[in-house]
Image (tube, rainbow, N blue to C red; front, side, top):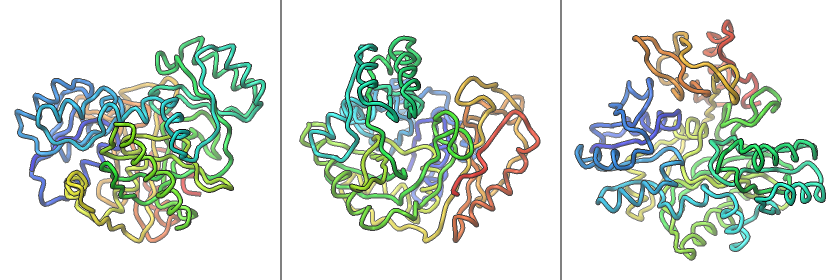
Amino acid sequence: MNVLVVGRGGREHSIVTKLGESKQVSKIFAAPGNAGIAKSAECVAIDEMDIDGLVAFAKEQEIDLTVVGPENPLNAGIADRFQEAGLKIFAPSEKAALLEGSKSYAKEFMQKYDVPTAAYAVFSDPEEAKAYIRKQGAPIVVKADGLAAGKGVIVALTEEEALDAVDDMLVSKAFAEAGATVVIEEFLDGKEFSLMAFVHEDKVFPMVTARDHKRAFDNDEGPNTGGMGAFAPADDVTQADLDFAMENILLRTANGMIKEGRPFTGILYAGLIMTAQGPKVIEFNTRFGDPETQVVLPLLKNDLYQVFHDVLDGNDPELVWEDAASLGVVIASQGYPGSYKKGVQLPELPEGSNPLTVHAGTKLENGELVSDGGRVLLVGAVAATREEAAGKVYDALKIFDDTNDFFYRKDIGK
């Protein structure tokens, strides 16, 4: 079988690696891919947003299945276009992807279908937003309504921070159209965890839990990022919590989307927080999480290609997971999530599967491996315990300790 993976980051590298283990897959293409993906797949110079080009390529190469990593092509209707062309794709429709594409839509949906989440209000006028913040007080959360690459969320611990966030989004247009509307939410206190599931309409097959570390620096300090590391499973989440989340969040959402005329097929990602009332939704994504995918997929025992096919055909893939711990740490360019240099040469990286190196923002330049993004790599490992996995990862990361061009958190998994 020929498979096409759309995307260029660490999540897509992990998907390519897992698909490469399948005896059913003869050829993997990645569009556009990165330097690490190029070792396991044929990278083709087609941008994720060039949907016409991707459809034409999939037809020409007789692609049997396409898997989409990033959110932007999902919200541009890539799944609809592939299906219209008679091509098999594992991804939600444009209408279903709105669950991630608009935070205000997602909040309205959750309110309508009684999916547990924080209280909220939506604003496009900065003065009205500020008046609401002054009335509610801090801590409070300010979110850009649209897609902002994981950076459009400000957890404001002071009123001043929240007012500044409103100015950034609604006045200075820091997130362009993505921030033309803001969602202001009640601050929920508790431990966060991620729960991803393979979904086809009313059938939901959850993965193991994971915990992502969003803040740039140790002790959860610094600005929000796309994620600086993760581990799986989040072992403080009980079976009762999972049963609650499955029934009241994942299944309720899948069934609600059918009622909305937006049946969901693909990966439903629920970013959850443990509260005294049980898990509540912080946000939905409509694709594999990044960096959660990089620590969850190494624990999956199944053939991932078969899983995609089973789910698309409405069958139970009977997911089986390693009884082990998986942990990964992101190496980022100095300055991320703000401005940073690209084209910086990388040291020699660990080769092999444990620890494994997952490429995110890398490319080959004159035969040398160089940085090409804010989050550059993830080094991950699987072991009997989280502490053991962390030990393997941090031993491998010592090669970055003598450089001022990159940084990583020293406390992932603690």
